[in-house]
Structures are given as structure tokens and as C-alpha cells.
Length: 464
Image (cartoon, one colour):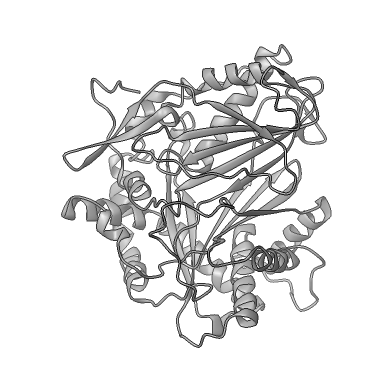
């Protein structure tokens, strides 16, 4: 990455949007937690972290504003590794977020029963929490960063001599191009007429929040229980059942989870909210825009967003509803409508000069966020036992949990990922408007839809 004294990188429109939409009460933080079991060497981990960060400069950078423009400035410093006690009831420790204007974009916490700072080798389960400001990276970028740490740890401990092509920090100058050449960009723009239609609907459609309770966006800090994250691992059998359900319905796994989120929100709102206001539930769906040209890209945002609107009165657990979501997502992919949000931000910044005004309207834009990260760490060239990555003779990666940010009025952030042949579902909820019991009810409803046996009424439909 270029030094701060030469030509620091300017934030892309998406990065700037994530920065400006950050609020003290609603930090723009993504969370990754790796769960390790066995003998974990803290000193080796810190060394691996230091080595890896040299190739992921946005994670050691903060943002400076000059004449209304935001730029990345790389500190080159490794973040402090905080050590806290392991707590099964609250795996994600309390956080106040990351102020990207005065601190780097990464925080790291190691949780173990033994917090003695003189103890180097920790036994039992060790959870490592990576908190990353969303301006610096999306989930795929964070995952690649963690993969590199795992590989370097195994190499330093002498367990595996991993030969893996490193990331190339010079590619960060191209991160706003999303791997496309000029003719590819022109082809994308030619399809954006459908994006204009969707953008018009995005602006005009009334969106109803999950609960009418108004969030306090002016609070000086997030709640004491931030991040409020619930977790559920599907068994291997339940995971297989989800795959069979999606196949029987002729839809993708991602479509199935989107439908499950709509069903869960409708069911909870009908049971708990006496509100007759008309409008749509809206789900924000991150779209990975990486291409083959981005394989060696360091942690960064190569992502956009699309939005699905459905009236609660028209949400039913029927094949017709599933197929409607499937057709819309297929249309989005075929027409490259993941670019619409990026083009909109770019155009808005060029006309207005900043995307700040896009974050200052007091209304509900999105009811929930649903992200499906797919299979995590599947390409890591390390030995495995029953699908679990081994970093040493006695150290295994037994699980991974992830979570997107939650925003004012957007009370839910659902993250789905797969590791070692089973799926993990995390629900990040706004504890200012939902109780833990409320969130557990929504999560259980979501898991009851995804897990269990295939209902008889779900007939086999052809995949188009």
C-alpha cells in the first residue's frame, strides 16, 4: 500500500458510505469468531497476525479527511491483542465499535479460561474475535485474511509447510473497478435500465421496520450488550435437510434462506406487534462482485447490495413464494444488478460531492440484512480431521461464527455460513428495540423453517 506521505488511497464510494453511516450507537463493525480447541500458542498467533497484516494494509489503516475527501492512512502497527476470559453465555465480548477517524480498522480479542498474561500456551477452547470496520473490508476479505493467519500459524509452529500464493497489496488501487475491464463496465451499464426501475421502487416503496419502537440513533454509545449476537449450529442431518428442501423447490440455498427470513419476520410481527401500517419488509442482500482477477486481493470491500421487497400480507410458505424469490434473484444476477447500488453511490458522490446526505434521513430503509457466506475456509491447504482444519497436532479449528452490522431501524442481521459439513446461523439483533427473548424466538423460527423434515406440501419443482 502506498505510504501516507506519497499518495494515500481515497475511499471508494461504498467505503465512504460505510464510514459516514457509522454511528456511536450503531457501530459499522463486522465480527468473525474462530473457535479453536487444543493447545494454542498466543506468541505464535501474534507473530502470524503481524506477518499477515503486512499484506492486508487496510486492516492497519485509519481514515483522514482533507478538504471533504476521505483517504486511507496506513499506520503499519499491529493492533493490541486483548485477552479476556472465555464466557459460554456471551461468546462475543462487549465492544464500543471502531472510530475509524482515530484508530485502525481491526480489533482482536483472544478469549480463554486462562487470562494470565504470562501464559503463552493456552489449553482447552480458545475463541479469537476479529472486529473489522466495514469500510475496510467485507466478509470475504476478512475470511481471506484469517485464512492467511491460519496458514502462517501452522508454518511457524512447524506443523505444515504451506505453499500458498500471497495476496498482492498493489491490487488495492483497483478495488473500485471490481476486476472488470473497460468493455465489461460498458456492458454492465447497458443492463442498468433494470437497475433504474429497482432504484425507483427502492426510493418510493414504504418499508416497515420489524418493530415500531424508534431507535435512538443519537446515543453516545452502543448498548452494554453490544454486539447482541445469538448463534445456532445446524447438525449435519439438518444441513442436509436444508439442501434437500432447496433442491426439491428448484431454488438456490441463498433463495431458501431469504424466504425463511421473510417468514420469520412476518410470524414474529404478527404475534408481537399491533401495527396496521402498510408497507413492505425489505431485506438487504450483500452481493460479492469478486472475479478471477481479484483472487489475490487483500482484505477490502469488493461487494455491493441488492434489496428485496415483499408485502407482509403476501408472504406465505408456499412454492409460489419461493419461486418468486428465485426468479427475482436470478434476474438480478443475469442483469448484473449488484452494480446498481455501486453506480448509484458513485453518481451521487460525483454530483453532490459526498454521500453524507444519503445517511441523514430519519426513515426505515431496510428491515433486515441476510448474508450467506457459503463454505468458509474450504481452500485452506492445511490437514483436516472430519472436515476441521488442523493447525498443529493438538489444535483444530472447530467452528466459525460471523455477523454483519445492524443499523438504526434495521433490527436484524442474519449471517449463514458452512464449515466442516454443517451450517452455522448467527443472528445479530438491535437490543435497543428487541429483547433477547424476542431475538431467540425469531432465530428459532428461522431454524425451524430451515431444519427439520421436508413438509409434504413442498412438491418437486424443476430448476430453471
